[in-house]
Image (cartoon, rainbow, N blue to C red; front, top):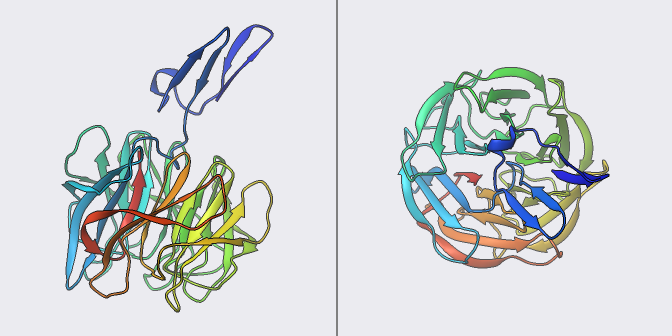
Amino acid sequence: MAFKSNGSIIVTDGRAFDNIANLTIQNSGNLTITSSDTFQGTVAGYTSGGAAGPTFSNVIDKFPFATDTNATDVGDITQGRYSTAGQSSIISGYSSGGRNPTNTNTIDKFPFTTNTNASDVGDLTQARGLAAGQSSLVSGYASGGFSPTVNTIDKFSFTVDSNATDVGDLTQSRLAAAGQSSSTNGYSSGGSGLNTIDKFPFSTDSNATDVGDLTQARGYASGQSSTTHGYTTGGFPPARNTIDKFPFASDTNATDVGDITAGRYGMAGQSSLVSGYSSGGTPPSAGINTIDKFPFASDTNATDIGDLSQSRAYPAGQQD
């Protein structure tokens, strides 16, 4: 973020100036520099891994934010697996944990600048699937999950390839929650049989607090983030089409603001600067290939804007 005060340009950003992502310069008397946070992208959404019927997918799909079109296969994660948590840095996507068919602790990383395969760069503190993923400017988080059901908040560095550390606890053990991120906090919403919205700070390593409720108790939903709100889409049981929205500025309950195109669960969530996306999911058990998109600017229903390269359920979502 940047602003001009008393004739001076002030840049405030968590990154070095020459590494600011998505740089925009406007010169009409004043110089303005803006950049997007890692929980929103300006280029493309990614959908990695998942369950494709009886097999486990290793495919990394990429679809553009600028146009509504199908995804393309641009690489592979290190092993086919599903129920992974997705995180995004300025330059890389991460897929952490998951099942194949037993729980894994692998943290995979793939670059946004080139279409290529992921590499194994570290381990979570516990082998588990069905964790929620969150991203600050400098770290990725995996919260909760099934190993058996845990309340662990893991944190790993974006700047150094290393193992995660346990930095706190959710308010209760849960699996299949949706993950959202503001510029200052991570959120874990819902989970199997739960409506709780938990919030934990990025600035300190500490436990989460319960800050509100979803409109329905549900798990296996996807999470999206605008600059001001978190979104929780779909979920189970039964297969839901609800789009819930909750504010980052105040700790309060979510409201139902629209529907995705069909009731489903086990989707990946992605966020651009202006829209939320929900890709893949189930039913049927073999998964679907739908990419749904809904606007952040207005509370309205999602539209089907394209297809993944293969039908699958329980993938992870990232954005560049």
